[in-house]
Image (cartoon, rainbow, N blue to C red; front, side, top):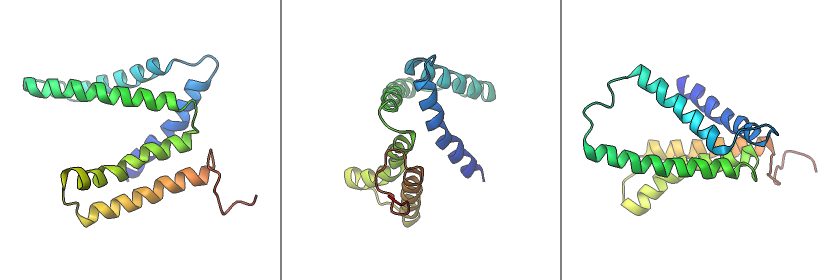
Length: 146
């Protein structure tokens, strides 16, 4: 049930972000992301205030590099919402679930268990249905009349 709730909350973020970016009196993409992740960081710090104590210097440096990469990716995704519908953007981002084990197999020769492939297939079906059922930006929808 928790996974279903998180998935619904995550999926609903795409139309919300698009409307926040597209509104005439909207916030800038960078302001929106800064507020979103600042709130998340404050909440996590309030829940686990001692979680950052004792981290090694290497952990901090890797965390900073990965955080910058994540921030650039999130910013690019948010800017892409200007040109893509929220359903197509959600589909593209949701494909990360599909591509991660595929890339792990190809690039790192990691043996991917069958249960992960089942999850990949399920995720691919879910994001495809999400994108196609909305019909936003998708021309192929065989169940709809022309």
